[in-house]
Image 1 (tube, chains in turn orange, red):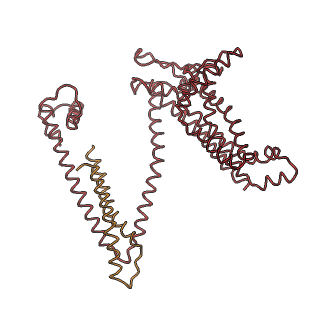
Image 2 (cartoon, each protein chain N blue to C red):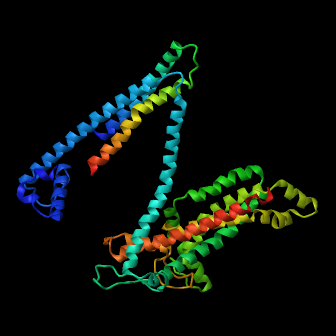
Length: 69
Length: 386
């Protein structure tokens, strides 16, 4: 797969992670009605997206560097 | 990995030859052209190399997919009411912001470092004293003769730069200040709203257009004007370039000074007028001195802009690097010389090319000093009346 399409896939993954994270944080909140969530739902969404994409992206940069040399 | 798969008689060669071979194979694998026909073993090696590359790309993709999936699962499972997700996200965003600002600073450092390196290489050919104090500029091109070194004297170029900048400032400071005073003190509100952006358009004109204007219109006009007075002014001269450059930097001075003059507190103006001073006395004796530090800062910024200006001078200053004090003759400047030294077929490791880096560094230091001076002056006196 070319590098550009990889990056596009990672961006899509970011959006997906955001969606999943937002949804899951809502369901977690409904399961524990007596506990207050620390952050707003979009924070959880963004966190999941970043966890999915950032390590993969760093590894991608590292791998590209290796392939170039 | 690739070298081990090469035929035995080739992999036994020295490292230098091996590097040439690998480069050829690399080019073949990437579909770049190579000199001469490719030997069958080379094509084979290129095919092998391409395979290896495709394989490693595949492995990379798979690994990235695994990491992304694990990361997402980990993130999803972490979600609990106690998790401080906002703090994590904010930390990442802060890191991103730091990275962005680091790019700007690191670029500056990179430019300076690369110039310093090349400049040191240049000084290994030509001693610094000869460069900084030499009064002739005649870099013979390396094709003329090996061992025959030209003379690299900075003084005529620096003199040309200073002369053109001085002429530009002579044009720009009075005009710019008058414009600023009129706009800030006398102009009616509606005229000011139209005129200020209109003047700022001057700063947006591409410098090549100014150069063209200087070459085609201003140069011949000045020559004819000189003829009627019995002066010989060549069409491409320091005067032409300086005048046009002065017009170019008017908006820098007028716009900044205008802002500063309007910032002078109204109480000072009222006090002066209340004591019986006329409007013009108030402007000259009270408003302008109060705004002076800002105006000096604006002028210095404009000067550093004038010193670094290239395109107008390339077209309109005549490009003759001779030491002269006559503004009606053609001169050359540091920037123009950099253009001349780096365009054309030149060996990039010859002193003829390397001198451009030394010139660039000199120019950079000069403009940097001017900018620092402007910033210090502006900062030191800015709050005096507030």
